[in-house]
Length: 510
Image 1 (spheres, rainbow, N blue to C red):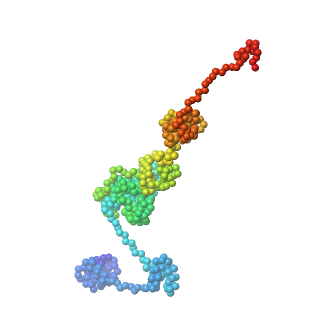
Image 2: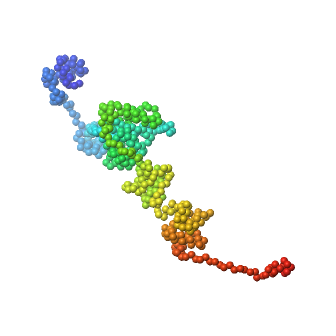
Image 3: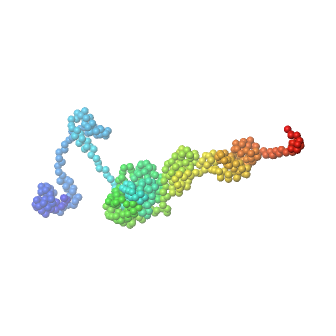
């Protein structure tokens, strides 16, 4: 009951009983106020302003304070305060006070401590933002939806981005909370709004912030690239302070679950997302908001949309970053495929950025080490020969056709030696052939061809023989002329009669 209203009734009605009946007050209360108003001469003149009347009440209508009971613990205030600051329990405090002569009860100490520690309500400052200045992101569990691939219920999550000024929002249901999904949802939300706010306030989830720290957040590299591409600032919340993004905390995941998903039968994800997008533009977008008193979609279309920054010409190419260790074979593993790294980095950790078309490998200070075309299938091994140790290159590069082609480049004799070795029907001679061709790097093609020609001259094809010829510089000597042994006619010592005379009756030759 307002005091001015009571005084107006007292000015017109002489009976306290009637005033009490009309206002629902106790008759004795009305009597006390009449006595006070009469003493202040308020019933026979126009009532003063509200401020003057309140000042008059404060100075003349105060009830006498009731007598105050003094706590038996009051004399030990300093001791109690010190012990509580040290974390001592109330029962232990009572025991310490008893040692100083205190004879009161545990309840007396308990009441005194609670009076000392009466919590002071924390003052919350409401922060309002300008149109286009801020968006708030929420990401949480949404229940189960139907997986179209299996037809079975599956856990789903919902992503919500709410513009702080208009309260207009975008929501999307997804199957996981991976980095790729997180960034893809941002892309869809900004395209839905047709622009970009200056900053986005996010929770400290792993997809966005690797290590939760308000002062120096280690932002996921993929998310950092996305922010730089679209031109918004990332503003992570303090740990365990959801009120820092209160506009989306109640109007985000909770609102979608209560209003859109509440009471619905599980449905396939694509159909659910189509219905959710329609709901954002109708039910959520056209409701009268409890704080702004205006429909969010109206505030967005009339004011905030024009204040958003324009979208870039091309959408962000979703990239995934990870830290990998270079294996002993000189490769890192990314998305079940293998990519070579300069051999000097074996055993060290590197940063890997996987885009849709390429894989870029950096050191931990983000100096680029190499770039590969992204493998199209798992298990693919992508190699750059310059990454391998020089002495290992030949073994990787040369197969049988390559060896034959290299030998043809050197010369005919080399090609014949190589072909002879490769034609061995029982032993694989590929490694000796590779070693043989490797001699061109030391001695040159001309000397290797001469050494092979010399080996052919003597009918030798072994790698060791050809290497010895080069080492001893025998390839630089002229080939010896072929040795031709004269053939002389041989005559029998016996005559034909001696050999065949027995056929004609002669003696038999012995």
